[in-house]
Image 1 (cartoon, protein in one colour):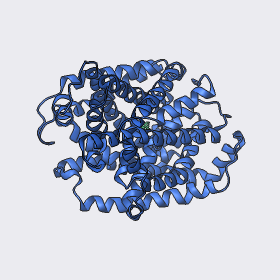
Image 2 (image 1 turned 120 degrees about the horizontal axis):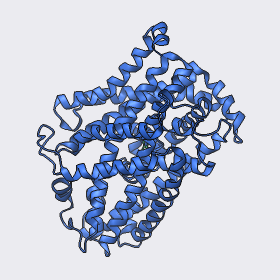
Image 3 (image 1 turned 60 degrees about the vertical axis):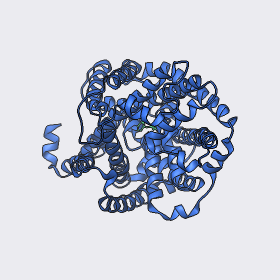
Image 4 (image 1 turned 180 degrees about the vertical axis):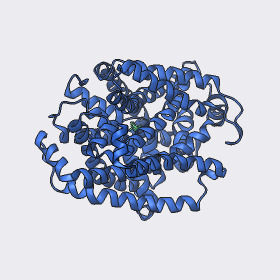
Length: 491
Ligand code: PHE
């Protein structure tokens, strides 16, 4: 008998828990700011509506209909699509291997917050580089593993493993904690943020539109890849989760609830982040522009810095990092579930063992990110996997469903089990709008990428980044052209 969620609410907790994570707290506010404040919200919302919601419905429908993880699902549609499933699982595995490292950074900060005065007061930048990461000069200088980070990573993996080892049924109990706790912490942080001096200056920067930004293709790519990342799309995670539903759950509505809840939390987190940044800008006398750092820097340099300037700093630092950890853990374990679901569909071994194997291997894969050059590797892998790998999976998955399985056939299934009926627009979206718009974005981003040298990294490092995209691609192509007979024989 397949494992089942204990209730519909728990299923929604799981999907929202997967969607809401580090992507909502640092990635979304940072992108919003980078692309001109309020102007980013428009491409973000457009991408949510034309790509995010239709694909989320698609993933829920596939999981529920086929009752399997992504590899089983796509190979049932057509054996030649098995490679697409395998490539997706690989991608998911690599993303969780570094996502867990980011959580380990948060764990270190959490423990270091438990002091009378925060140790990074006034030196947040060098503290992150020297004391947390023990960062080397450049990617070519790898001399050692950072033992503290390694220990943090082990703890994170234990938290992940013991959340899921008993299967989705036990995950439900943990989610009853992991959903409300960060929610409450976020509200506390918002109240704290809004009552700080200068909060409104920050919020003004958050919401101020800058329409010129809409003309760049970069903003559209950023919006589309953010939608994939934040809704956990293209990883096979939502397919795996929906496969633990009974075949007749009200899936259209569940997809809508998940998407709306996730984006509302992102918008909400934006207020928290920007009110704190406004405070920091006001109290240091600089403009908000100069306090906003990129990606990981926002959560691990700017936040610790800003919080260290607040009254009751250690308390709020501990709450903030606890929030990051509790938000991240259910996203991380959903990725592991994406992989374990596929493995336990294929090999009939107990979840405990499958999960253990996946966690151990993902931990080992993540060790490179705990070295002194780890952050450089993390930056490259994250860049290529999220901006190219995911978009590629989105293109192939929508073509596979739209054209090979048949969008209309899946739409009939969704509507037969759901109260909210999806119109024919969904077919158009899956067959045309998503593959075409993502392909255009992919191609234009590809050319921009080969012209520029990402992060000024040496060419072997860039090649390694590209390999994370080309290897899954090669697997897809290999399975697609492998002769039917040999596929049948080997399976
Ligand atoms: N959606 C998560 C976040 O925003 C990340 C994630 C991606 C989780 C893919 C699962 C699968 O942080």
